[in-house]
Length: 72
Image 1 (cartoon, rainbow, N blue to C red):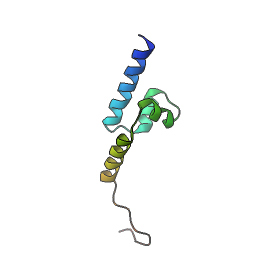
Image 2 (spheres, rainbow, N blue to C red):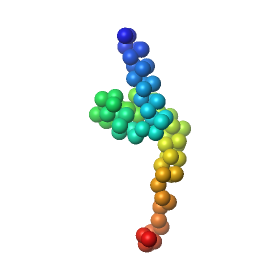
Image 3 (spheres, rainbow, N blue to C red):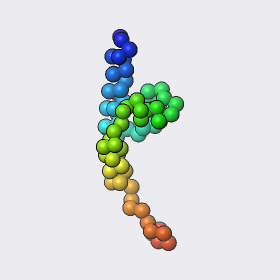
């Protein structure tokens, strides 16, 4: 297998995991990267990818409390 094909398959694998909501740290482990910054560059994540990820987090997490507001 040529280097370019191998690279393309690994990138496709990583991006597929990312678009399915797999955490970046898990993808980084699968790809054998020691640093998630490498994975971000490797996957060529775009700003709209990051915005989509933030929307998922916004839906999954409760809204932030104001300072001084007690937990219920």
